[in-house]
Figure (cartoon, rainbow, N blue to C red):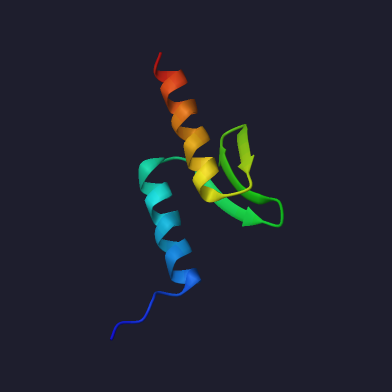
Length: 64
């Protein structure tokens, strides 16, 4: 029988994925949610998934 990974382990993996997907962005978590910072830009969302979604939109907008 296998055991489920701990919540901390899962969050660490998701954070690693976000760091690979968005190089140059620094991620941090506090009581308001997750924040990504790059230079003078700071984006905060209540969840890491929501933050990654807005970063994808931001990335596509910058490419245009």
